[in-house]
Length: 262
Image: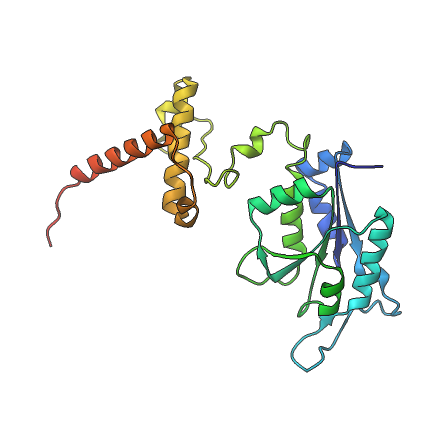
C-alpha cells in the first residue's frame, strides 16, 4: 500500500519507539492509512550469532561503536522494500539543529524517510559516508541514543501531512511556523487562582482577538527569542501599527513606575 508519508526508523529499541508513535494523533493517522511509521530492529541484520552490533573503536577510547555492516544490511533491506534509495537521516549531536523549516522541507521534498538511531559512542563513519544523506540534531546536548530525536523528527514531519491534523490552522498558528512564537492560550474556567482570562478573548470580536494574538506573539518572540525576532519581517502596515502600539504602551508603563531611592 502507498501511504501519503512513510517513515522507517532503524533502532535497537523498536518496541519502545513504535508504541509511542502509535498513540494519539499519529496513531489515528496510521489507522486511517495516511501515514506509516515502521521500526526495524538493527540486531536482526547482523550475521553475528550473538546479535552483536557494536565493537571497540579503532584508535582506542572509551565505549563501543556501532558497526557499519548491520546498519548497512538493515538500510539496504529498507531501500529494496521501497524499490529506491530512500532519503536517510542520522540523528547525531554533530548534525544540523532541527528547525520547523526542516520539518516543512522534509514533508515537501520526500514522501519516505529512513531515520537512523545511533548508540554507544556513535556509528561507524563509513556507513554515514555511504548511506546517510543528512545528519540532524535536536540541539547542543547529548542523549544516550537517537530514539528520542527520531521520534521528535517523525512527529514534527508527520503532523504536516494532510489529514493527520483536522485543519491546517492546527499547525500554521503554532510557534515557529512563520518565525513567531505562539501567543498565550487560555481555557475554562474564566477565573483560576484569582487569575482572569484576558477580557479581549471573551469579547467575541474576532478581528480584535486576532490583533491581540498577533501582538502577543510579537512580544513573546521579542522577549524570549531575540534571535528569531531579528529575522522577522514586520514591515506590513498592520505590523508597523502594532509595533507603535507596543512602544506607546511600554513607554506609558515606564512613566508610571514609581521612583525608587537607595
